[in-house]
Length: 257
Image (cartoon, rainbow, N blue to C red):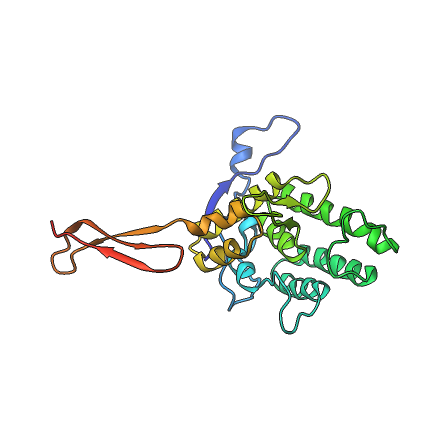
């Protein structure tokens, strides 16, 4: 889905003052603003109207990325480097600027000989291992400063940045030094909010379910109520609701007004 708004922007000249009649001869330019996500995963075309200004580039193609990105290893993605290369291919079709980030991370993982972050306190065995942690931290902060919480969250998932609590009732921690769990949690909450606002509920539920942070996982333990009306007369049903708990069971009550 793409929404565009046309705005007349008269040309502006700096320097000496010009007469009013002079400015009337300056042609007006038309700026087209793209403010929402563009399309779905079935259409990977980057074609767009000329002179488009992306007002909210952090949500451009968000639905496509959320559907196509890989966040963990799978049958044909045996290593985290393979996951990064796969995501680089996805980004190449949607946002080439992010492609290089994923390719760089894949190269560092290959050169380090690691399949993830090094163990805490471990001595780096080569230059790539030494580069891995500070590079990931820098990439995360760069994307966060650009407002790209989607890439931040996917990168955290791919590299298992969040360390789960050691025991029940414990607190999750960040595996990256100088990057606290509160900041990472804000990225997750912001991204989940974006997904839900764009009705991408399946992707949001999957992210919540697989997150190592119990604070994020608790979002799936909340019940959802659906209020109903009579299918015959359309009147609301007093106290009528269908409640779905975290186990997916439906409990329905109804009372006719």
